[in-house]
Each structure stands twice: as structure tokens, then as C-alpha cells.
Length: 86
Picture 1: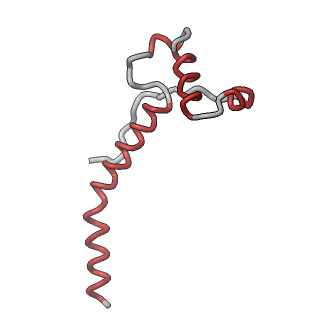
Picture 2: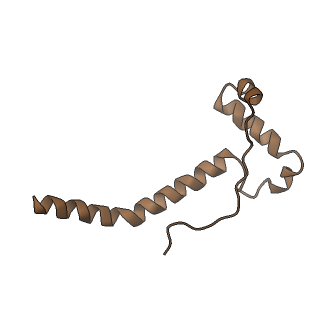
Picture 3: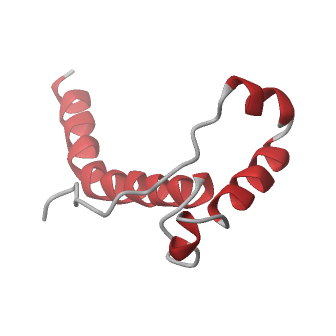
């Protein structure tokens, strides 16, 4: 099973320097991003689970967990073998 699976694009709002100054906290940034994606043409994607930093964070976390679960047994075996070879 391949570890990497292609998926549709996950659009994010590109923060301009002016926007970065206005959004002083992560919550401010999240609110601004939600407002951005509620405007056209992005509003058709709302509810798809494919827009914004929170969805990206969730997707990357799941991918990291999948890779770790798949690779951990091999890494563990290599470590145990090296310890035995000492």
C-alpha cells in the first residue's frame, strides 16, 4: 500500500503582510480565514472539509500517523537488530 495518496487541492488563504499585522493571534487568523472562504468564489467549497488551515492540519496529522504506523515496525526491528549486534 502506498504511503502517499494524491488528494484534491486544499486551498489556504495566503496571508499578506497587512493581513498578518491585523491578525495578531491564531484565533484572529482563523476568523479571517473563515470569512475569506465564505466569500465568492470559495463559498462553494465550504463544508467540503478541504479548505483552510484546520483541515490541512488534520490531513497532515492523519498522514503522519499513517506513515508512522506503517514504518514503526521496520524501525523497531532495525533498532533491535543493532542492539543485538553490539
